[in-house]
Amino acid sequence: MFILDQIPSVANQFMAEMRDKAIQKDRMRFRSNLTRLGEILAYEISKSLSFQSRTVVTQLGQAKIKVPNEELVIISVLRASLPFYQGFLNFFDHAESGFIGAFREENENSSGDEDIHIRLSYLACPSIENKTVILADPMLATGKSFIKSIQKLQAHGSPKFIHIAAAFAAPEGIDHIKANLDIPFEFWLGALDEGLNDLSYIVPGLGDAGDLAFGTK
Ligand code: URA
Image (tube, rainbow, N blue to C red; front, side):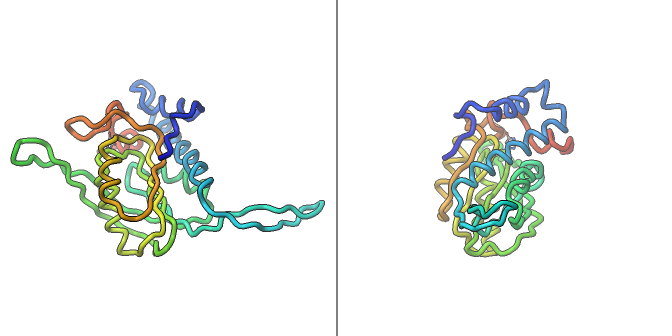
């Protein structure tokens, strides 16, 4: 598991601005910080991908270079993921993209507690058969939307590896994914927070990432 905020870097400033009640109201800044986190995590993921050697002709000779050698599909979990996903797309020029809509339905269960159900809606995805998938969703709370999304995406093939990328995560979501995913995977996180509150929001987290990015409910 890779956790970005364990390493002192400028990324900590981006995450602090996203969490800060006084600063996060600036929607444009919130979106651009999400994109910057996506770019940094894309760079970290890129170090784990396979590369092949090539030679390019320069003005003065020949240079041996390494180019990515992986069929990559980046999945954006709508809607909060859009600015985060853009960060991955900025770095992986030739990746294909898939989109899946996931939203929470809050029901009361028989004991009177709030129960979170994830409903999936829109899906557009290329084949992911034997490809490397990056599933990008900025908030990994219960982990249910990740698992449900992956189950639905499997109608488009079996990926060889899934990189699960989130800006903020809760231990409960990490455990849920570990218990329910039988495809090889790795976590790439901005920060791993304390846990979930009664409404399954990440604490201390930042609030609702989709609302903060787009100002809609
Ligand atoms: N989704 C969010 O936007 N925030 C959370 O804390 C959890 C899920």
